[in-house]
Amino acid sequence: MKSKYSAIVFDLGNVLLNFDYQKVIRGFENIASGLGNKFADYYRQNYEVHRKFERGDYSGEQFTEIMLRVLENKVSKEEFYRIYSEIFTPNNELVAALPVLRQHYKLVIMSNTNSIHYQYGWKDFDFLKHFDKMILSYEVGSVKPEDKIYKAVESYTGVPPSEHFYTDDVLEYISAARQLGWDAAQFIDNATLFSDFEKRSIVFRNESD
Image (cartoon, rainbow, N blue to C red):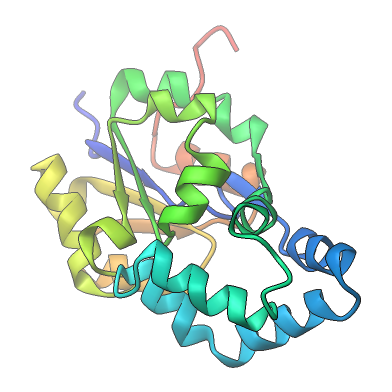
């Protein structure tokens, strides 16, 4: 029997990759006392700067210039890239399911991310080889929950909305996918996602497992 689903779409951060922004704060604090907290305060109070970078409205150079000014020019560009980006660790239990999923479905990443995090943070993780496509916000000029980024996924997969299953830790982004006719489930933890797979007869384990 043909599966209802043709494409499994994953968010990246807090799903396939865990991340810890406290590492960023500590990294800048190690350079100068108070610098990490100043950076964190600016980031929280000016989140639209981060959002514009994710959407591609700011280039990496433009974003970096803003951040280095916030950091009182006490951090070199190279130090900024490293501290800002070395925050990711793979969710190995979920990553282990990718080879089986790929045997049965198109696998797509749809992520609100930025060029610096891609280049210096996660592009070399081995599990990415299992994905057929990555739809990244800064490349398509759109961030979740805007329709455009979801439509970019559909344009790639070439299958009806109802044949997409999507998981993301942010409920707002899940709701946007459902509005477009996708099936979607909020990512809570691996066990919950695997249960969601089982309910939908999505094949993610070998029969011998």
